[in-house]
Amino acid sequence: MTLQRVEVGLVSADEALVEFVAAVFELERLPAVRSGSGVVHRLEAPGTQIKVMVPSRRPASAEPVGVASPG
Image (cartoon, rainbow, N blue to C red; front, side, top):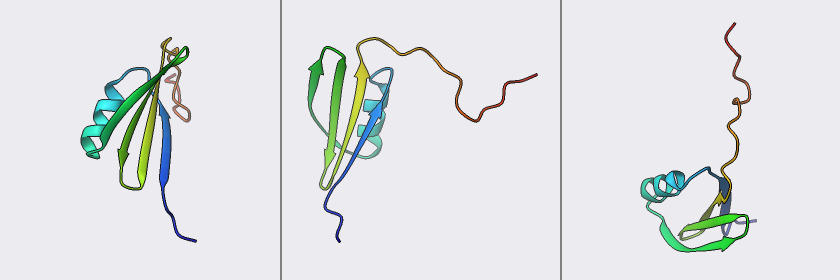
């Protein structure tokens, strides 16, 4: 079996992650897809596509998993 394509999906509170990933990995930005729940930004290079979902409503902040609270 040979790997033909890799697709990764991420969720971000804002578009900063989209800009960062596009710049660092030198990915082409494809047209964004808008829906009622948010915007999916698609970034692409040969054999790779990264999709970043930015929800319409910013998610609540949460304590990172595995991080102990002080005290």
